[in-house]
Image (cartoon, rainbow, N blue to C red; front, side, top):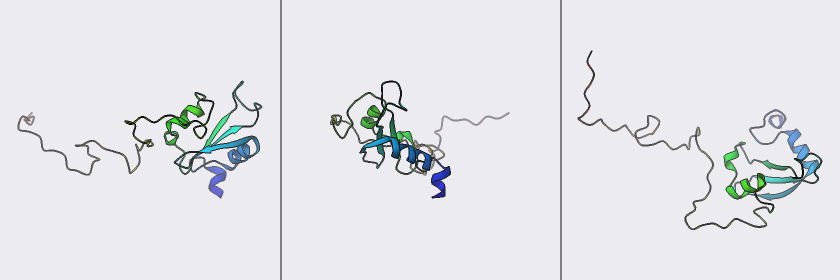
Length: 130
């Protein structure tokens, strides 16, 4: 409980949760468990647009927001994806967050961070001799 008071990266802080509880309505949840809220009034909003919030499930990382919810968060769409979902194309892959800097990061073949051994150099390499 103490981490909720001081750390924002493990989810919302107590102050943020209180602000959202008293001034916003829950509008939906995505497939990753992130919860989305919209302000009830324009009081603490941006001009004529109601303020929108996301409470991340687990570590706070903006790349965890799927494209349809990203569009709603940035006022591209008025309706939430639960009301009017974006049409999915046959060639689209499911959304994945950015794994850079995590144990799930992908490393190209030959990278020193990859588990496979580096390829041996071909015979066209000649060592430099001073």
